[in-house]
Amino acid sequence: MTVGEHVCGECGHQFCPECVVFPFGTSRPPLCIACALELGGVRRQPRNRPKLSRRSIRQRLSLQRDLAKAQAAPEPSAPEPTEAVTPPVFLGDDVVADELPGGWTQHYP
Image 1 (cartoon, rainbow, N blue to C red):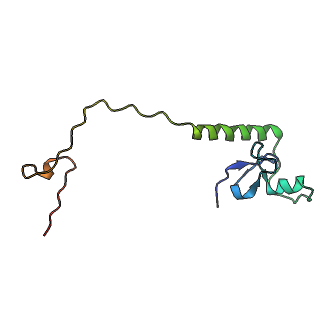
Image 2: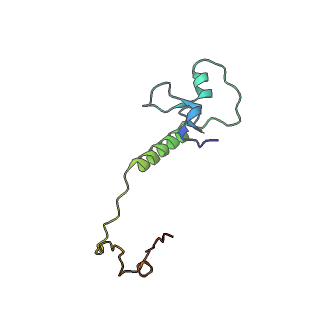
Image 3: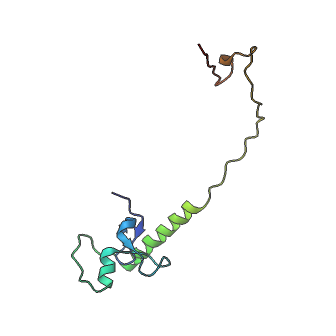
C-alpha cells in the first residue's frame, strides 16, 4: 500500500499517485478516479467516506502546498567548523596505528 500524496480537488480525501488523474492539467488539483468518472457523467457509486466541505478541501490543499514548498526549500547549511584541521598522518615505521584515533593496520601473512 502506498502513502496518499495527492488530495482530490472534489471530495478532499488523500490518494496515492496511481489513484488520481489530472483532467485539467497540473495547474489545478487532481481528482480521484471516482470523482473524475462522476464529472464525466458516469453514475456515482456509493462510497464509505463522505464528501468533505469546500472549506475543508481548500484547507487540505493549502496544507499540501505548504508541505511541498517546505520540502523543496533548501535547508540552511551548518556553519563551517572553525577548528584547525590536522593534516593526515601517513603510517610509517615510526608510527604505530593503534596510537592514532581511528587508526588501523593490515598485516599480510
